[in-house]
Length: 193
Image 1: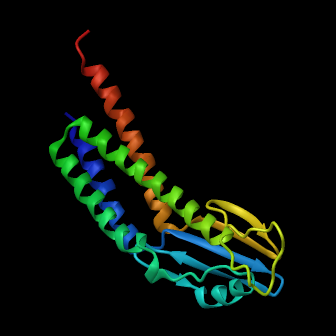
Image 2: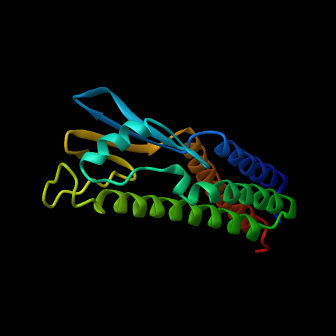
Image 3: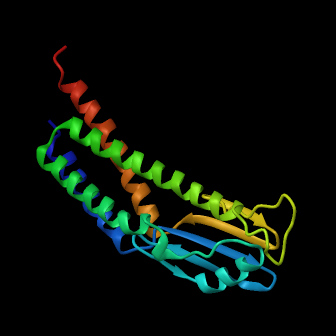
């Protein structure tokens, strides 16, 4: 069984994920000489916001698909997944078993990795599946935005990083791992010699 502090901390971590429903999770920023103030957009659990109309207008010239948030199924599923993680975390805290803590943190980690992999897949398709009749064609050029970090795309410097909600989710994951380590140490101390 987990001790009271670990159970309370797990419940707090689960509740912290609620913030991810109301804060942006990821930010993509684009800076170019003709846009020194930059363009960009935020990815939320259920929507996207920012300069999508301007970005779609520019991307049309190089044959990239439009970013249409309503056509992205993950934006309909993510609020349910986050809600499920909150409920599962609260359930694991109430149950108090160490294996429930490990299972919850594992599901959170798998979900984070799956989300990043899905973002990479979306970016790959977005940057490689270009309209062959586009006004501007550069043989061999693709325009895949980075998942994490920065990249030069023609005259645009693209940067992709977690936004506040993403940092909270990564923090919850890191603290969940700390709780697992703490509980394992407590279990070793409590084990008969």
